[in-house]
Length: 305
Length: 299
Image (cartoon, rainbow over all chains, first blue to last red; front, side):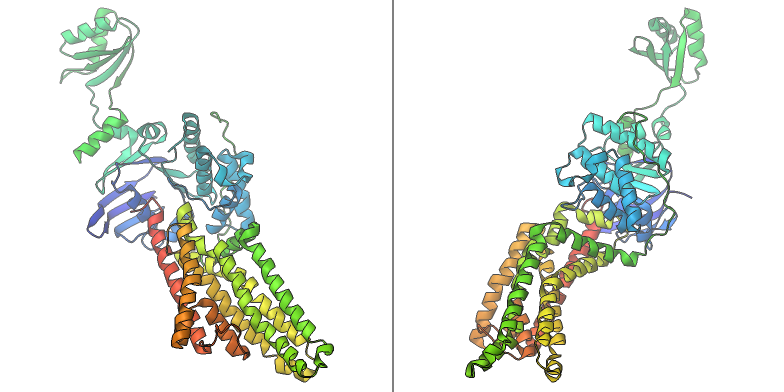
């Protein structure tokens, strides 16, 4: 079963086209939902949760969003970017209430509220009023309330926003752990490409209301790589190898004391590197196809649109 | 928290049944009541005030039932009258308690939820706008009933208990449904109308100011214009006048202060019904919009 299936999805707000003819089959464990402001990410989330009417079809976990939005929301957890708390409540009370609103019996909701908050790292602080929490603690509560009803899919909207480096690292650890320990898939909507690079295995890139890329991170970054663009790591003396390769018609650039970026001539393969290294007596320790950074790949997809 | 040190109490997937979506309003109602009961000044203090009003009115009824007063010639008629008007007269005081409570409780609910982002919390789940509206109204209804329905019913019960014969009891039995009707109308009005005002603004303070201005200033203007023009329909726009008008006509008692002079039973009931329906419509519309804009940020 495809996690999210979209066919001809379109949404207008008066004259403004928010989503246009979106076709995509989205799968993966941790999926990064990327796009500049106004790309249509929020509108797509609303459509997927069945909160706004739209044209076309959208299915989440095999459930049609247009007609059974409430069923989807029972099986999906949502961690919002902005604060979404109720005044005067402790974290335990809030998460218990969240569980009950998702259809869990009260006792079960309370047990799961404790477990979710403990998992999110709140421990004894879960009994304190949320109003006095730090940003990091609030982010943890938002994650716990999204987890309390045992969702199969989690939408996380900018989960590391406003966090210090340590808290950010802890939040990313939790995100990586969730599919492993709880078996739920994650859609991570964020502007922070390093976060995506760190945790996501798949990406969806949106721009101007359309999906511009759907696939694995490797596909995204490797889509432009070709066998003739290499990174070569040597034990020592890279300049010797560089000179030999240049003589054979390749273009070389030393990036570190033991690493070269090599562009081979059109007809050559990586055998040329090994041959040149043997000729000049340089030990090759690693060779891989050179790929773009995620940021470069993202910009390329956006600019191509 | 370092790698491998993620806390876990032993996760197990939930396989039990989930409650039907139609029961969500009960969860919201229970939460509303629990939150109101949590702090002293939000609700409990006004319950104390309503109890005090009921106690004073009950004490007046009890004292005036004493045979000593009956034996005092012409004054006996007056004290018997006081015994019978204590219940309807107390309605105005119960309404005052309900108004004060509305300032600390329901006049800021929706504006407060907008400010705190609570609609995202509610509508990212299977909660529907109608669950929210019904749950909030039901919760506030229960709370307001404690202030405006329980007191009159207790006093009506006390009045029956003070009857001197079975025929007297039968004659006064009608007090119970009358007290229930007036109390129920007041409950609905004081639960719904302030909630409607809380949906008119995005700020708690603004919502509170709007409700207070409508009730105090608008109500006073309506009474004045209604009094000058002898138009009950205008005077009935004042919420307490409408409730007291219904009470005055139902209990058939002379009215103090002249507030009820121009409001008939029909005018009172129609005015309350219209204000309640308009308030609920405003709440429903506001919450429906909030559902669409809350999740994923405004569109």
